[in-house]
Length: 226
Image 1 (cartoon, rainbow, N blue to C red):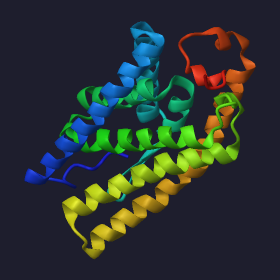
Image 2 (image 1 turned 30 degrees about the horizontal axis):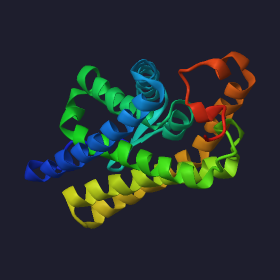
Image 3 (image 1 turned 30 degrees about the vertical axis):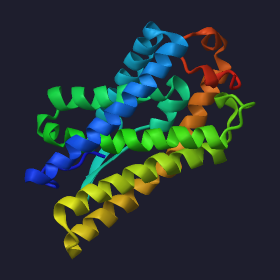
């Protein structure tokens, strides 16, 4: 879902620095909470796993430019369920930055917009997960309906942010509105596909016994909430 170069230019791009700072501020908060619960080493290992996963998602999985952005299978809900919100957020931010530095330097001016677009919906999805997944249910046992709602929250948030940046930068011309609509329509396919990936990954985690004793996966993956 990279915002294409030129969508937001000039002084307007300053807004993205502000939204990115807010997103990073929340990241600092959830990271601190994660360290309190599991320690720094656990957070670092899980964040490394998330970063490597995000880099693979961005570079290896199919992605196509559509309208004002690109359609990616980001698997944000998968990262959240398997590794937790803080490692997922760090992985998304770090993976995006690594890709920009080494693979797509032309995307670096849009980093603030892109990191905002990825992280803010992640935080929203984490809040939704707390509400729709009962405390007596481990993540490995959630249903397709629940994973679909998580995907709707995350991918819907990404679509909303991409539309905001496109309209903020390019206005409400017929051409720009058409580009936004084209991207939004294409991106809805991810909303349907991602829950199936989530359930497949959760099924693998459930079947592989040794994973349940690992400290480097989200505690809620195998256990009920405390």
